[in-house]
Image (cartoon, rainbow, N blue to C red; front, side, top):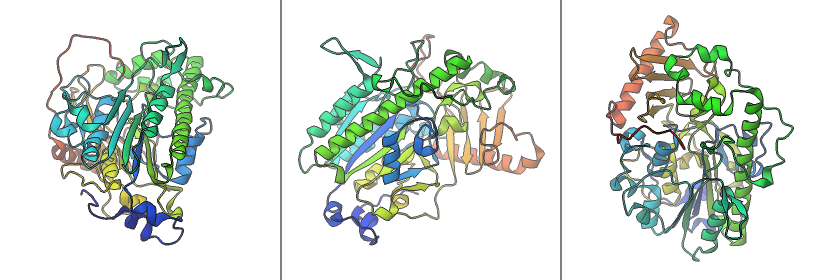
Length: 481
């Protein structure tokens, strides 16, 4: 079910109907369409924030956003890879519907013309993009999506005209603040800032590069070793996973105890660099008098293995790969509704309809995600999802394709190109690290069959059995994935 909220004042939804704690001047703020600031990191798992009970990482500005806004504890991506997930974020569509990942044809114009930036631009918003775009689109599409388009890619340290080096996160922040400084009075804006951090610089042995302001962080920290990083656990997995790209990258980053410690600290420093960037951007909003009417949405494009299962990177349905942060801060929201932690399941496909609904712009009927506005307003929709479909369709022999369902309790996955078929079932409530595969256990045969059928049902709803659409290429090293 799609919730558009077309024609309904957001002030009524978020403020007027909630009298206690109403902020002073709320009537004036609710009469204006809000500005939208969408902040996206690259490869940040859900627990890489202080507010998510991580005792080591320092993210005071992310934590402040959560304390002032709403944090979604159960936020997931429907495909855990940069390209497909970003396409889903822009469009509110599943990979099987938008048909885009690495090495496929570009996103079609009929899809990008219904993306959140294109629709907001047509509705009168000034739209901007800074950072990692991460998708290929048809010629002319970015001009219809953005008034200001500043894509940026690594290396993370870039030489400046005066010969000094500047970190990419700082450059992205500079460009975001340039957009804010040029905001025309009276015109609402939607600025999407897509940080390249904390993605590793795959071609460099050092992997993680952070701003120098973060050099001193975590030097005395001791990074816990994941319980599934043991050789015994790794060797019990199927051969096609043991020989996958995830294991290759594990050997780049985590295959020695000291290396694991230093690499995770580097990853954390990159996230702390983004945290400082958030502080700078919020200060610019305050300086320009924009803060009181700017909604901030913060999330990431996919989760990340930091050695769990003997893996690095993402791609698979396991919890550390698919679960990401989500914080929504709306300064117009009544104070009693702020500072909440929500357990309802949110998805990357919900982001586009949520941004559109915040702007009171009609959500296209083909959108497969749902607006989170009712939840932000303190409601608990009775028909809210209790499961979602997961898929990973990249054509690469070292990253096996998969599809499955993750419910509030269960994770089911099938590696549908393996012969014979390989299936897994986990009770992540009782077994969060998904150690015990219950697929062959007669005690769980009924739930196993139900989730098999549910996977078929959702697969067919979003596009049916997998049909290849990759562009054949010569063999090359997989990078920046």
